[in-house]
Image (cartoon, rainbow, N blue to C red; front, top):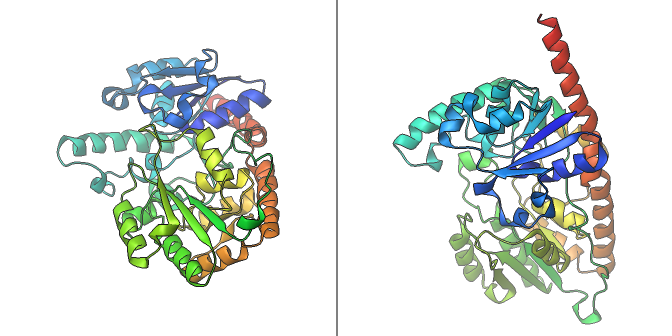
Length: 400
């Protein structure tokens, strides 16, 4: 079976499927949007696997029937897509699954709700036409969902359900524990915290629904509270474009008087760190902190894969997402939880013991191997692909 995947977000799944299945796997990557973390992956240089090019333009999104990507997808039996991919796979007339990555479900199909993200004028007209294409495409696709996302509400607006649940695949060769996790006696009770998440602290209703509200201020205040209680703590934050409330967080740090305990880092490359660079920073921390908005992000998964205790706040956004979570993680998860300042401080205090850090880190890594290692995810995805193709064939036969 020939299986096409589309979008940067699909790279790890495509790699995993290639490693564990007999499928002919090819991934289509839109060159103008390749992130720096992906640019140095050897797989992108393999022409039998990666098709890198300028696959989408405004004209092609609005007229997908004649698009180059549509023509290529017609050569495949099944497509698994994200971003604008569903538009082209629908136009190709092949069975396709849609795995939303964020804006492709929460913003693009709803131009009125997402109007704050663009300029007025011609962009509004394009967004309206784009929304029509995205709605048609998503409704024609099998929808496969990653857990702890806020996708229930937009799916309900589209009249769609969840056709499959899938854990997000992680490259656990890159994101792996350090060869030696020994800590010097002098540093044993000092808790080093790494928080690479974008700074988004404004409780805007649109940002809350679209997974943009990270509540980073809970961590900043929690660190200040831990320092006040006598815990030696240091915090590493990432300065980057798209971190909309970074200046507000800097002001908060100064107001709390903890600037001497905070280090801001910025990648040498304008598009950010490579995966290896990020992994090294996870491994240097005693605690990795993701967001507190209820969602499971890559920071939490990568930090846990590196064998580090990881703090976030997870909460299914609705009954649809609760079913996805229960189906994927029947025995729960290893992530440390906090939803207020006292909770953050208590987690930091708990991790002053090296043995505790080591124990939590080991269990987190093992859990990641069971549920999120890309080969394990791909093995669970293989029957989903086969079922998708078989269902399409059966439906096609019954319509004759």
